[in-house]
Length: 403
Ligand code: PMP
Image 1 (cartoon, rainbow, N blue to C red):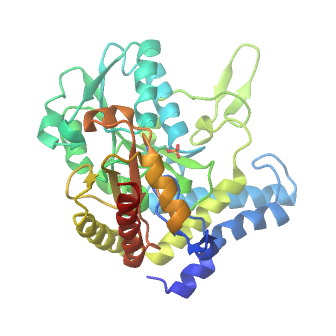
Image 2 (cartoon, helix red, strand yellow):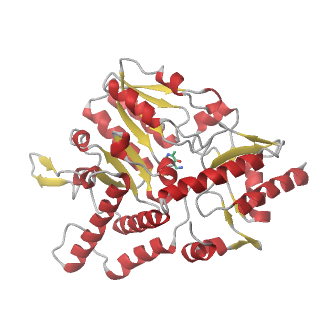
Image 3 (cartoon, rainbow, N blue to C red):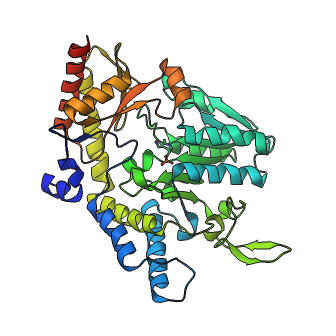
């Protein structure tokens, strides 16, 4: 892992002070910090290579195209996919909308069922709920008790009509890791397709789509050190070929006539219009950075820090922590009788600590947890045990102060 000096060089924001207190950034579940290596790469693109891709014969356009496509290669290598299986989107939300619309339109789900859970982020919930009306399928919801996923219970919801499972790999609320490998094996025996929402999983564990044999995957660049506005949708080539496009327009066609349009091959078929080239360039730099740190080191660090935080939270008898004991990098909690927005505000103002508060885009899960709003501390590899200590200190202070 990096020394403090190297970390500060890459993440100067960590030296920021909030009301005289050094920033503690515990909102990584919402977005990770962006290293200088990433912002430099984006600036480099705009300063010296800015042009539209795949269009011009001029040098800058060729350079921009090379940079854009080399980002796709880096993503493909990172997740062990083919380059034609990597589709750039704006983020997980757009990836899932693309997928839900496209598979709905394909007819694969007609009069059949999609199985999801109530622990999903809204972006893996609302598209299915809403597009069910448009494309005549039903959504089956697994609603686990206390928001704790149980594999046997979940699989009992599979029936002869189930055609697709769409599930998160890691809950953005409870930090529970979902056994997607077992789900995929079970599903494939029954010819059910599986889509994984990897928005939280990929930053903390990476992913090998081949080894996992996952059919479809979505994740966001900004949660793995990249810029906002760029994300990935992955699908097995043979399946993507069968799906119709989501957006129509330039770049995604072979030819167009008044009579008809012939769509481009993968991945262009799913990428209409001018793409976010700067974002893709930044994403490549982010992946390079993660590769430099090493995903195994990230896994090890996150595990140790979460265990430490779990242990320290146990000291606080005035705090409710949600979800299972075994979690990764996310601790969601409430302080008894104090509104989470107040907790988050005081932590920020008095201690310089950034935690998220609210419904975490998971209202069905919060309902199951018996609350409308929570606080969430979420960690990444640059966070430390000392920072967790400051959070615990802050919570003790809030309890005393507002008692
Ligand atoms: N799924 C999960 C599990 C998430 O945590 C998030 C982001 N909080 C999303 C989907 C949506 O990601 P984005 O906002 O980048 O599209």
